[in-house]
Image 1 (cartoon, rainbow, N blue to C red):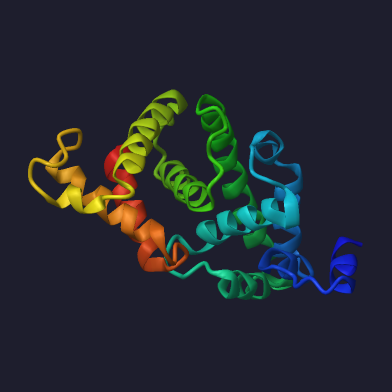
Image 2 (spheres, rainbow, N blue to C red):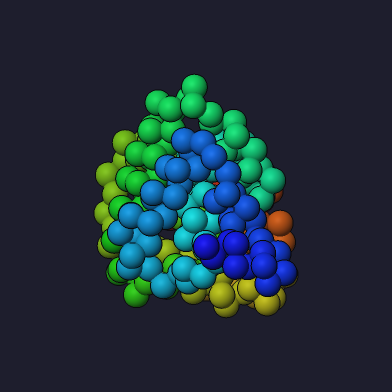
Length: 211
């Protein structure tokens, strides 16, 4: 009804709304996660225009591709068609990976005052959690949250002036080793966040800060 009304008013559909109109097991799995997982019940991410579905779709793309593909809107549409009815078991496996990661992310987000609302932060932290879970590493959510707060504080401090991270003496609050990673993260965050090269750059930097 929402889509039909919007079309009648001449409002173009956004990528998440277009994906929601597609068919296939992966689309239904993404929709179930967006509607039913408690992360989306407690987060402060807007529900307007299928935004929860959009975030969930990006989490599935990270689980499916592990940063080896771009995850822009056309790539997410292709992913939904790629995982057809013949790949139902793989869809169930992806669903479990995403749900397990979001369960940890929900707890972490609670410690952070539900401050995770930006899409690429959501994607980057979700991927990091999936990697830790795949590697069998124990996850101390409070410790993860503390390290993330420290990282975010630095990211925000240098977001408008990342060049200072490359100058000796201009970044007394971050080591020389981490300063280059933070510089790379900020630049990979600014534009084209869904490109695989930027996903991998941010992941490498975040792992350095969170290890």
